Length: 178
Image 1 (tube, rainbow, N blue to C red):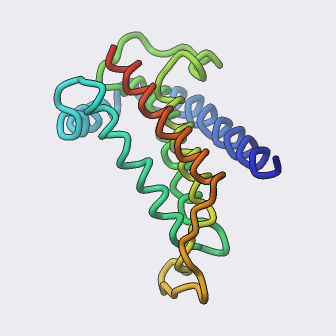
Image 2: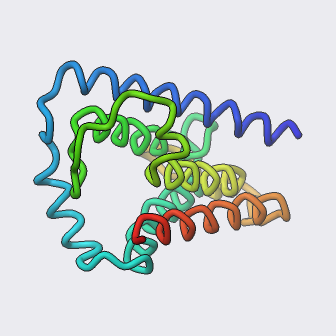
């Protein structure tokens, strides 16, 4: 239960970061400022708009966060330093309406938590981060050292979080493509 509560606390903090980035970017940045960059990125990664291609494009950050958790930086899993970047970036996308298929600007509302697939994808990334938080084999940011007597051990709880994250990625990809 303690692990789940720590995960919920992490998601709440990340959601606050998302909404803060959304408010600031809406106030300070012009609409569509990042649309060109994300359109090129979308064309390169996804191309045609099918659920499997959307899923594959989202698997890269999902797995990258878990890979970074193989490293401990200042005693914390490395993925915890990357995860907020995705949440803040999504907030900036919402605030500037820089989506590839942009329509009307998304009104500031809690409805994005269930009304848009981006939050579901971010939640999947957080689940992947939580699944792999104890997988560290190395430590250090600039000088990498192997942790003594450390083996990669996957527990049943890890697999529950990991499978839940993967399931959310699949569901969001299907929802986004339809």
